[in-house]
Amino acid sequence: MTRNKKAVILAVGCLVVILAIIVILRFVKKPGEVVRNKPSDSALQVAAEQQAYEELVSAKQATDQDLDGLFDLEEAKFGTNPKNKDSDSDGLTDYDEVKIFKTDPLKSDTYGLGHSDSWGVRNRKILPQGKLVK
Ligand SMILES: [Ca+2]
Ligand SMILES: [Ca+2]
Ligand SMILES: [Ca+2]
Image 1: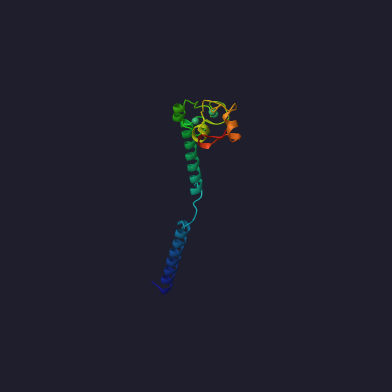
Image 2: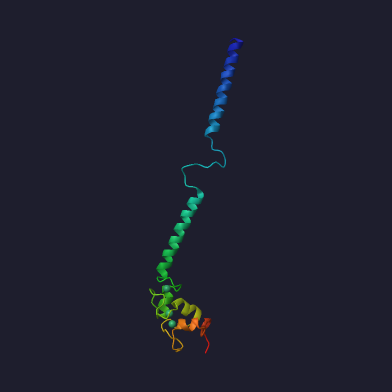
């Protein structure tokens, strides 16, 4: 083999190695590089949160049909209508009557004030925890 032939083989070999390195670098994913055509992590997280929220709302509706804060089981205990936020139509929700003002959710004028329970609350005659101002 002549010296020139050896030089040409060496040059071609080097060229092949350089081309191979370029091809490898071109197709290897760099760290931190975003892969396209795939939903991003934040989009997947938003979708998961949306689904969790919808499940929570439907679970809440299944157990508190009128969404007044009083579960259907509690409404059954107090005899209130689970499909009506204000069973006695006095302007206070069943929840507010039972949990906050301790008024009767089935009686529009719990204390015989001559007005509805909501009037009593608005005019500060009925205070939270069943306190009555004469
Ligand atoms: Ca309810
Ligand atoms: Ca009421
Ligand atoms: Ca009432």
